[in-house]
Amino acid sequence: MAEEETTEEESAPKEKKSSNMLMIIIIVVLILIIIIGAVVAVLLMSGDEEAVDATSTPPAAKEKTVSKRSTRSNSNAFEDTRKLDEIGILYPLDTFTVNLKSDSGRRYLKVAMSLELEGEELSMELDAKAAVLRDRIIRILSSKTLEEISSKKGKQKVSEQIMDTLNAMLSDGRIKGIYFTEFVIQ
Image 1 (cartoon, rainbow, N blue to C red):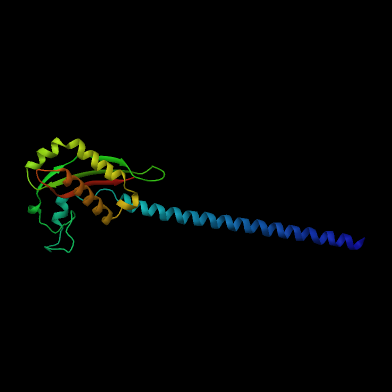
Image 2 (cartoon, rainbow, N blue to C red; image 1 turned 180 degrees about the vertical axis):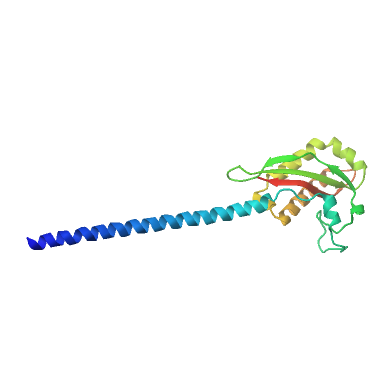
């Protein structure tokens, strides 16, 4: 009987030690989960701040700070090597606010842009086709994801896609460039 009492007394501290050890392990795991969650949240939020780096500089400001190189291997709408006096007639468009393509549907894009026209006669055609042009631009912008438009290269691709689409619809001239005067992602 004396032996039975000693085994019961020994098992009680062992159970207490194992439950304390289990509690410590659970607390350590919870702390690690919280730290990992905080790191992931900080990384995700820092990526959004770069994407939200709100408005791009207006075309006039871009042209004042450009380099003097005259050629590039890739000619596109963001060709900022041209001088200020080489920019054609600018046709400002109203602001576009669209939902971006995403699973949650909680991101939107607010964009204002100006079209660089080849000649003055094109502005009359743009006025006549304003509703159709806005529709095409809205369709293009709303089909993009945050990842597609948050980088400089992504903005360039969107600009080229809009320019190609609009030029296919025009008969009195063509659009030479697109300048984003406001570009906000939220």
